[in-house]
Image (cartoon, rainbow, N blue to C red):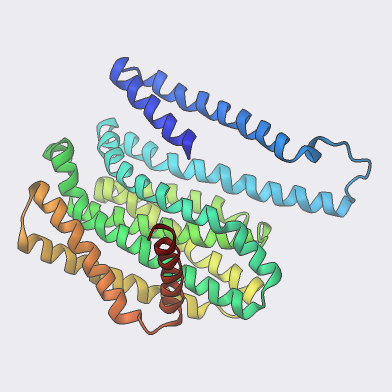
Amino acid sequence: STFSLFNSLIQVLALLIFGNFILYVSITVFINIVQNIYIARKADSMYPFINEKVSESIAKDEKKEILKNCYAIFLYKINDVILKATDNIVLSSFIGLSIVGIYSNYLLIVSTFKMFLDKIYDGVKDSIGNLHASADPGQVYLIFKVINFFTACIFGLASVGTFVVANEFISVWIGDKFVLSQLFALLIAIELYIMGLQKFLSTFRTSMGLFQQAKYRPVIGSILNVIFSIILVQYWDISGVIMGTILASLLTYMWYDPFIIYKHVFKKSAKEYYITNIEYVMVMFLAGGLSFFLSKLIIRSGVGYVIVATIISIIVTFGIIFVLYRKTKEFKYIMNIVKKYTYKLKSRFL
């Protein structure tokens, strides 16, 4: 958004001119306040009925339901914050603050991918809810599978790119001393892929109005993350912390959200979902391994490697996806959308 771009620009300028981290953080707080004021005034002007007084009161049962849903959402939000902070706390406690700085460089790459891709899911959230209210269950199920396939493809590509390119990118960017092991790059890539699936499942679940059914799952996930991270960091250092996060996600988010969605929305077993997504993961491991091998075969290091490896990752990942899935309903559905938008763009500019 405009505010996000403006925030980033001001933060960069503040660091370059003043070099003050407190000012850097304060800018985000100030920009968020300004953004909220702008949104509130814009909403008041576009929807003046918001400020109209209503004589009717909400029924007790309805009010109780709203409060329950708000409580469930609160648990999700607060645990997201805790989950993000846990890794840094464990790292700084067991390894030291310096490793947190190195970890942040990799996290910046992952966060950039995630921030861009999250916009897609935030944009379709309302459309999914409307689809659930108006379409037949079969159509809703098809759209679920299409978005799941799309998520696997896009976050799969991002994960393959992260695994293949991240270490060399860090080396070119800030130097070899900030580069971690290839195992760590693999774990960061897996974590990014899991984040993508979690975002998709969370978006679909909330669009279906399923708030309370999994409200304690984030709490359990945070507790498991702390336990696993503390245990594994003592054996695998920073890689152990990422392993802990991955394990906590697999034991909570990654199996329970599909279970809830299939049970309450599709009225069927989630077995098909689990099998399909295990297959997608295996395909992405194949794409990652092949891309890494071919990239190292052509060029070993430097800026050239970053460019060549990025191109190879895209070609190999999408090439494997095309060969394996070009005849599926999900692939054809996405290609039809691409063709429609391509035709519209041609009509507008040609």
